[in-house]
Amino acid sequence: MSAPGYLSQLGTVLQQVLGQLVRAPSHSRRAEAARYWAKRSLAFGALTAGVIIALMVLLDAYEIALMPPRGTAGLWPLRIVTDFGKADYVLSALTGLVVVMLLLAPRLRGMSQAIWLSVGTRLQYVFLTVWLAVLLGEVLKGTIGRGRPFVGGAADAFHFKHFAWSEIYASFPSGHATTSFALAFAVAALWPQLRVLMLAYAVIICCSRLVLLAHHPSDVVAGGLLGWIVAMAVRYWFAARHLAFVIRPGGHIDPLPGPSAAHLKRVARAAIAP
Image 1: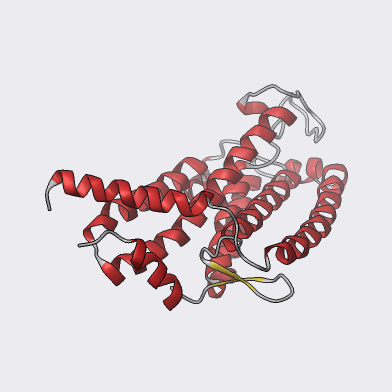
Image 2: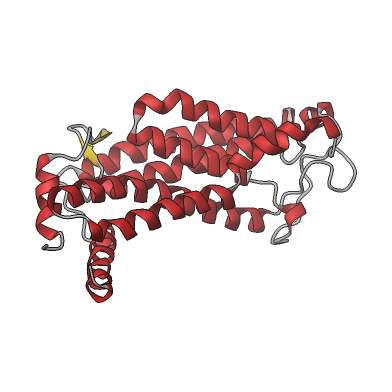
């Protein structure tokens, strides 16, 4: 395959991949799904907000006082584990997978390319969920400006410096919790059989942040809530465009069990001719 031909086909794939994300929603049940998930999100969000406030008042200061001192040498395994929830690393890995998907797509033809791009659509969902959650989390961190545990020397759960945009005042919400829960919910939304495994991954990351005195309990709960909200919102965006998900009667959104025949035919028709 010549370089000009490959680059032209790569451009066509990029246009197709981006175009499907920004096209107008067309699912006939999208309004029903929006109402269903808006109600669930409001109810779950309100309940979790109450939990976050309760943790701030009743538990945050007490919990961090029980943790080993920051920098304790014996905690080195947790410092390795916690990096599996670091936004930079997770997004770098997802970006690499997206790039590989895009670069290989022009090499394929017909149904093979259609299947590959269908898998790529699911990968796009995971990437966009984590990226948007991390972006919103960073905005909230800088705006709220909650001090990390023991900033100022005391176990004060209400030490704030709003609009500080400083690392030591970037405790709420936890970035690792946001990243890990966004990833966990996105993967579980696509492959429900991995739900327990992904939830365990996110909980382990959150626990590591507490033991390492990087965050208060309410910080990690808030990060988990943010990850869930973004994952559900992006899922609705995809489902409303017939991408990776299907909207059932009643508004419930389920993952497509695999590339459907109809979807593969649509993608194959749009694929690059050999």
